[in-house]
Image: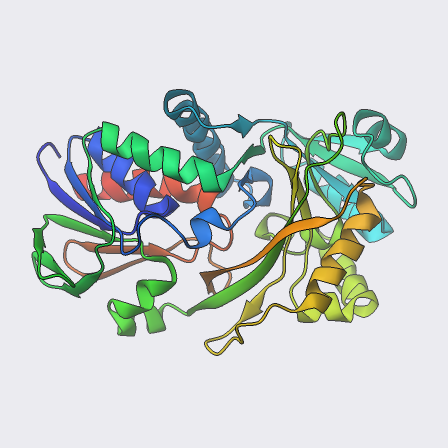
Length: 373
């Protein structure tokens, strides 16, 4: 691999993890980013590293490897991270049954009764609580600062990063940028987020992926002394991530939630609460799909997110300091890692299903390893 010329299109989390991994393998790496810095889904997420959402087995092991890599890089690149774990809270009998079934998939999980949840995590709403599942693996980053810090780490490794450099054409052995420059490659990685559709559109169309838009919020910093203690989620989140789909009680939980909360189902709402170093909470999110999404956020969606949060967390100050949207590509057939090879020596990576922060390191290792085959 030493001396292999690698060009990466995109300086988001997928592009940067591929750049680091290729450079560590001895490659000569160049990253081309269309904007002045990463501005897409990589900096518009919760910052949650989320192994608990990954299917038990190979994908969960990949996720755990990703958490370890982030922790290693955080120590070198010096960005904040919080390995506080997560608590999945159950308020419906069906959700509690799902958690009990899921607990058997790993010895890492700890089932907690309602009293233990409230004792260990005082921000948890005790009303109607049946119990929870504590997982120590989940870790929180602050994406708007962690991704730039990772980009600086990439540069220190000797990777050349060109920002404000949109790629106009991909040819057999080089790319051409909009300002007429030419970058030759032995291997090309395209990790351009939603702009992926501009490159090899037929391959992208055949991959059964579509844009997904989400709405998110950040509160003002909470009063001194208040802490969530872990990343908190409730019943809705169990239906969102693929890890829980094979639990025998999942169909009953899904049916009950769709009957009780049809508007939440319509807008793809599930709720995560994550607290960052300044005390603020990142909250969300919703999921809308399609190519013709309107530009406006929906206040009623934000209201439903906040109402669902109150079901499982008691937060002293829910004043909202910021609201934003994110867009990423998502598989329509449930795949959390879409890897395309539309041409020899060209790899496209996308559609991480909201798990890009968690799975990108393992995906990058698999990509670079495949080049040795």
